[in-house]
Image 1 (spheres, one colour):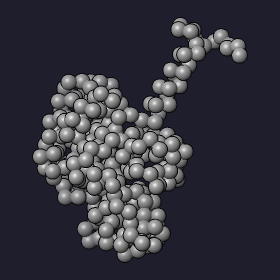
Image 2: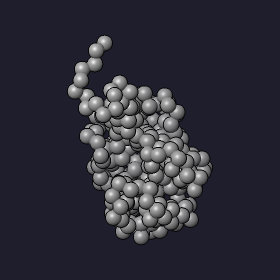
Image 3: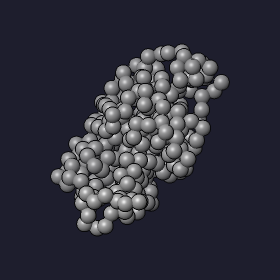
Image 4: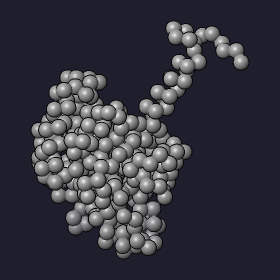
Length: 266
């Protein structure tokens, strides 16, 4: 048995925009639902959600057989959680808060087997189809595993060139939420100064041949980043969709200005 081709990695390398969604609700059922929507990728977030290895496994299983590639963002960039996520079958990992070349190099080493890395070897795990993929996985894991690094601070933005140039980094993701906070514009992800910084940093990464990505919970803004050349763009989240739909539904049922204390009679 051969391991499956990483469609997301193939797409961004070929210059085909990949449209995604943030999957923060720790539920395999939510992932199963999102798998029917047609997104190219979904980010399974462990950094800003209470997700565990168990819930991430269920989420990845929810996308199995669909066109949506699950991407996992671990809580932090460190080798132990990375090793376990790879063994669980994650083929694309987004490492948060990468600040310099050394941290990017460490992320790459955590994803590679010796002698080019430090990843421990197991011969029977979900990633290699419980041993059925065997030698093919060992031979092709480096080829199919996609390593993305996240730029979130002005300091990291100033080192985009050296971070993007690291061998093994397949894409550079820009985090507008943290970047806007660090730049003194809290909550203003679309602030002109923030957008300018991201645009300039992304241009440097692309000049080195590295695809760029971003999350913007605004469809029109997301489309503009795609037009600018961003290859993997997320345009919303499951939490945002549920919260927005729930609030809108409530507003439809309760008169404007009503604090909700009146009982509805059916």
